[in-house]
Image (cartoon, rainbow, N blue to C red; front, top):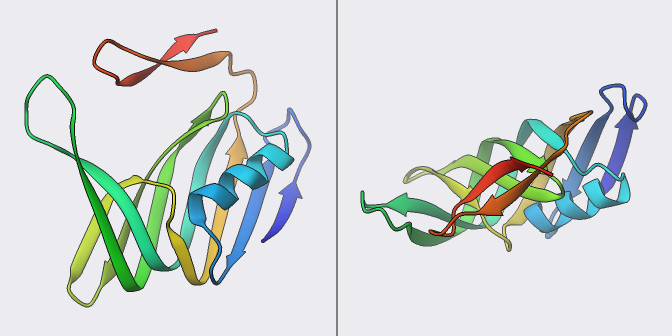
Length: 144
């Protein structure tokens, strides 16, 4: 993993992360953000390729959250990822494809880079939020 900080803390600092074959997507991102002391950020861009994708997606229309956990292995082209990190807690969704179709959902640990990934974050300055789960286990933003 290579990381590059652009700008100054407290002035819209950006973090560019370059991942190589075999590195874990979510785990590496969190390691890089922690090392840069970037607790609140937005993902501006993410492209690359995956050899393993772990993700989940919401199912059903019930009040209780039902998640459909998915795993795909093979040559996967990752075309986007977006989301935020608030108070050190990541929440990302991504889109990727293979020759059979296009897939998308909530990024889980264990996604593995095939050739490379290039990810750009921008620090969110002045954020005083955290996430708290409600009675149904769904995390929402709240003031610290």
